[in-house]
Image (cartoon, rainbow, N blue to C red; front, side, top):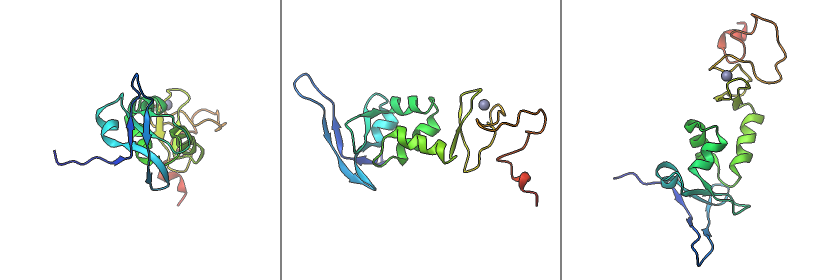
Length: 147
Ligand SMILES: [Zn+2]
């Protein structure tokens, strides 16, 4: 095994004699605990603790926040460096990095411009175009540039 895992600080689970011990280290923007090995290999182990609270997150927590979609859970895990994962995820929706399909409930990559769900084709929330037929190919598709 030559792979070395990212490990920032450490988290020692509580025992019957002691509370959980959170030993943060500075990482990119803040003081956190981040344990890649726990995230990748031990779903029930704490892999992240943000700077401003002692809320401890496991891979299962990240997966739950990301609709059990591993790609997004991993993106979130690697991106957070001080904030709560919930906050980071909210920003992905706010800035149209991610979309959440109302119909099939899947998260999908957006990349800055709201676009229909690539899985079932449903337009994003707030797109009031209810007419039939003219919604195909809008949004993400490069061909709508009109060049
Ligand atoms: Zn969909």
